Each structure stands twice: as structure tokens, then as C-alpha cells.
Length: 489
Image (spheres, rainbow, N blue to C red):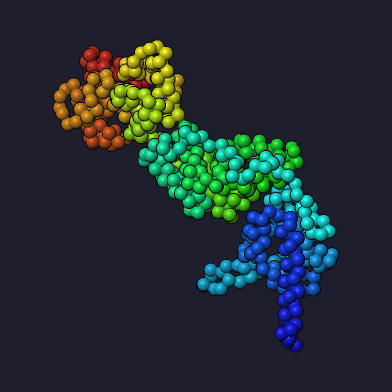
């Protein structure tokens, strides 16, 4: 028997009225942002006896409601429909098979309890009127507005001081694009990884600073993963984890440094997972740094690692010689100091492990010069920097070997790699090739390319010639022994 239009209208009014009443209660118990994100998109579908069916946009949406808001939903449904009141979800499912239209599946609500990390503005405390009692947030100083949360950024670590080179061009370009439109690019999250001292912390600060310059009203926060863990531990001890979560959900640009520190910390990973989802769903920018790419990090849950791959993962590599020289010149200019170019080049040739050690060597040289009241010369740099390099993990490169050989014979790099057949230049070039073969992992072809664009046969011939001269020429052997000592310094 068919229903009349008035009966249809009555049923429609019933389920809409029930859901509207539920919505009013829910809205009083969660933050406006959470309500807008997770409840505004819900559409009531039907009411069959004591079962209310609501339509949600996706499987993920359903899972999130079940994990975080099931307790609140059950209370409101039972308040409206009595103790027998139940909830059922209608989920829109995409069907890409043969371009078929989307379809829906129906899933009843579970009997699970909501997680302890429910991201609500305050603990649920529904009274008979359906209102909630507000609980203060200890992570925000009373009266302190969101805008004034300290960013913890270091002003000196800006894009102005971040030298671009082949080693970091992709990461820097992506970082700058993010700062122009945080949360709205494809680079969210932005995962920066590198070995120690190559600039990942600097780049993350630079992005945050530029965002603050472009968007003064946005809240930017830099925090190390270690500090994040300590804060969460304190919130558990003080029995206010919800307030900890709510604080981090306020951030527009969240920068987490050294995420690998969360390895093995299950509860901290769980809470970060929920904060990550909350921010990402609202197009808030997330920036993460680590010492390895996501696929190589151990001790982190797969669900987190998979999210780290949603945006862009960019690495920072060891800077080449040209970039190292630019870094030193930029720092010297910023400090208002004058240092001869040959000294700058010597530092750049000598230290190629990472930027931190390179800048440390420069500071040591300046301090040595100031304390001993000596001018900064190449001779002073050799004495001081060579000792400094002994105590660092210096990787010998072809560039470094060439520099040592040129300094020893007092010739220019251009002359060493020229086509001249002068005996002294040829011998110097052959020594550079020999030491490059002995002290680096480079192929003969690569060595030849660096030494005047010679082929591998020329390098092989040079190595044989040097070996013979060491055995037959005492003067040449002295050259070899002196250079060997200098290269190993």
C-alpha cells in the first residue's frame, strides 16, 4: 500500500526533528571547528522505529565518528529515542569499476567506547538540559589569545640566510611555496630529511618565519619531537590529555623537528596521529623533519608513516664546493668581517662533511685570529683548520686533494686542469689523480672528469707513472710523502 504525501512529509519531519535535537546537544559538547568538520556534513536519511540512519561522506568519516564521538552520539540518540534508540550509518562508496555510479552501504553503530584521546574542546558532561560544563585549558594561559602563542622560531634562521644550491634546491623551492600558501599546496605534509648539520632545522624555521611575515594572523609553532613527548607525558600525569590535544589543534602551521624521536613511544604516536589528522583535514600546514626518509624510519607506526608520504618528502644533500663557498661568504658578510678569498676557499675545500662543521671551523678561525691578534691569512688557516679537521669526520674528496696539491706547488686550479705539457704541471696533475684514486671511491672516469676532463686511460697512466717515480726519483718521492701527510691531516 502506498503512503500518502502527508504521511511521507510526517516521516521526513520526524527523522529531521530527531536529528536536529541531537545536533543541538552535540554542538554544546564539542568545539565549533570539530562540529563544522564532523557533524555539519551529516545528513539524516530515515527513522525506522528506534533506528535513526544518518548518511556520512566516506568510510574514513564513519571510522572517525566511531573512534572519537560514539559515546556522545549514543547519549544523544538515547535521549531522543529512549533506551532502545540506535544509530545506523549510510556510507557513500565510490565505485570506479566500469565507471559505475557511487553506491551506499549500511553499517550499524558499534558497541565500542570512544577513545580517551577524543578531540573535543572539553570533556563530555551532558546535563538534563543537554548543555556542557566548560573545563579550562592549562596549555593556554588564561586571557592569552591564539594569535599570541609564541612560535619558538629563531629569527636568524630565515630564507635570507639559507643559501640555495643543487643540494637543496627542491626542498627550498617547496618550502618557499608553502610559506606563500600554507596548507593549500600539494606539499602537505612537507617531510624534510637529511643527515646531521645539513640545514633541515634551518629550512623549517625559515618556512615558519616567512609564513608569519606573510600571514601575521596565523599561528605557527615549532617544537621538537622530544619536547612534544615531554608535554604529552606531563598532560597524562596531570590528567588533562584532552587539553593538550586541543592546544595543538589550534595551530595553523605545526613544525615537528626530529620526528624519529617518537620511535617506540606508542601513546605519543597515537596522540600525534589524531592531531595530524585533525590539522590535515582542516588544511593546516604540517612540516616534519627527520634524519631518514619515511621508508627507512623504524619504530614508527605504519599508519603514521603512510601519512608522511601524503605530501612531499625532500632531502637535503651535502653541499658542493660552490655552495660551501657561498655559505661562508654569506656568514662573513652578515658578521661584517673581511676574510681573503683564498682562505674562504681553503675552508670550503677542507671541510665538506656538513654545514655545521664548516661554520664551526670559520668561528674557530675568527676566534683564533682575535685572541692571538693575528691577521687571518692562508698560513694561519692551514695551521688552525688542519688541526680542526683532525677532530672532525672529514671525507677526502677530489676537490680537496686538488686544493692541497695546488697549494703545495703554488699553482692555480685552472693551471692544474689545463692542457699544458709543462713538466711540473703535468707531475702535479698526475699526483692529484693518484691521490684521488687512493683516497676516494670515485671511478677513473670521474677522476679524469674532475682533472681537466681527461679519460680513464689517462688517469690509469698517471697512476702508473707516479708509482714508478716514487721508486726512482727521490725528489718526487719527497713531494709524494709531503702531500700524503697534508691530505691525511
